[in-house]
Amino acid sequence: MSAIPLSHVLILASILFTIGFAGVIVRKNTLFILMSLEVMLNAVGVAFIGAGSVWQQADGQVMFILVLTLAAAEVAVGLALLIQMQKRFKSLDIDLLSKLKG
Amino acid sequence: MNIATDGLIMGLNALQLMFYFAAILAIVASVKVVTGKNTVHALLYLVVSLLAVAVCFYLMGAPFAAGLEVIVYAGAILVLFVFAIMMFGLGQDETLNSPVSRGFTLSNISLWMGPSLIALLLLVELIFAIDNAAIQEKLTANVIHAKQVGILLYGPYLLAVEIASFLLLAGLIAGYHLAKPDGASVANQNETGEPL
Image (cartoon, rainbow over all chains, first blue to last red; front, top):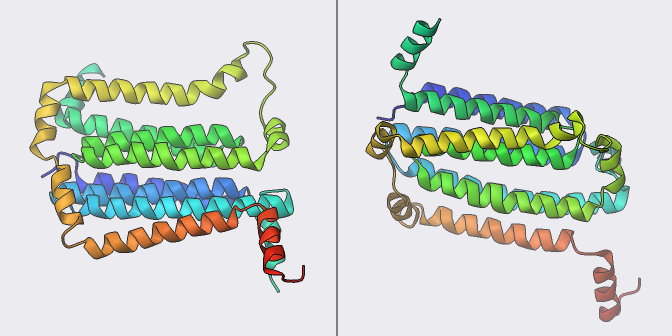
């Protein structure tokens, strides 16, 4: 049994997730949206590690490693898309992307 | 007041208190990431936030995950961000938002003071955790070793590892294709003889 109660770990994870979610919703700069996504994925990792440490199972860390690879792939594709966006619009404002419709 | 805080410290144990401290640092740094104006400064706070979460992992008895967090998140992914920001060439945007740096003013200090202060607090906390025998005893009692993780990763979760490797391959190809300069695709079209 871990020394830190699971509920407190989950509270930390949900606070971090909410901060990241607010960043994704509120910010207009696409680079900040990607950073907020990183914060959200990190919060998911906190929840997995906390659950794994409470039940003394290594599954939590395995899931954390999978989340880590997901974050790496997501950032690679996202930043490449941002480079394209910077090339075309000369700006990182996400509102410019609404021109894509139709 | 003093007696009350002493009682609180006795009631909660030192390990728990250190976890809450690192958690508060992580939350503060994350808020600074989301509310930041300058991209590079927000990135600095993101590194500090990831380091704080790594300390949390260490205190939760997952030192392997803490190491991975520092190496992959704070090392690799953040370096990717820094290189991308360099490629954007945001020169004008950055100077618009950043304060004027003349001399040794207060606003000039506060730019790097925040992240370095939080990082220093994390370092002090980590040294305290490593140095304190009681905390070490409690940590080693419920640590999950990397060996267990490895056995599980290449046993029941083998298929998930394969899928993750496909995901990374897809990320590699997409990153190469999307970040390719425009000139490269034009040259290819010329070689294949397609009309431009």
